[in-house]
Length: 119
Image (tube, rainbow, N blue to C red; front, side):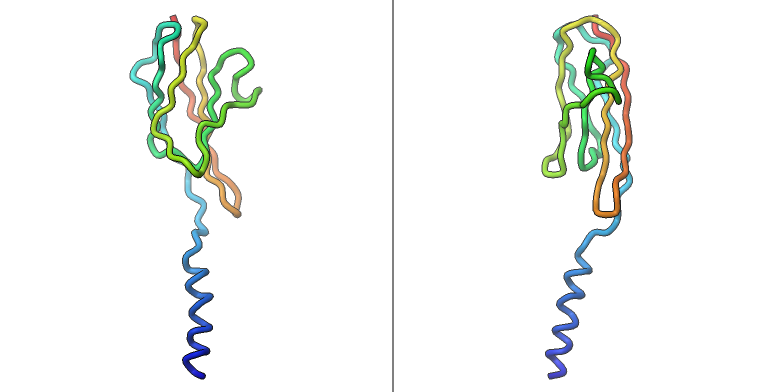
């Protein structure tokens, strides 16, 4: 009977010990090879330490942060190392990546902004 009580005590202990209660800090970066591109040229954004989710705002008309809905490019179920995009209109664009980590305690977010010139 003593062993039964010990086992019944240890089983819930293992379940609670395996839960990750820590809300991780968001510390990601986004880089490109250069800051000036030709119209239609493919831009590759490289991610370092991408968080659970990332949203992309291209800076084009109707796609600016925070006034519009961005494009979700990462969710918790996939990895993100690169993202490609190209612009069809010349100009200077403020590109914004908003990312965050979320759990039952809340969420932590970070915004990364890049300035790109399209000729």
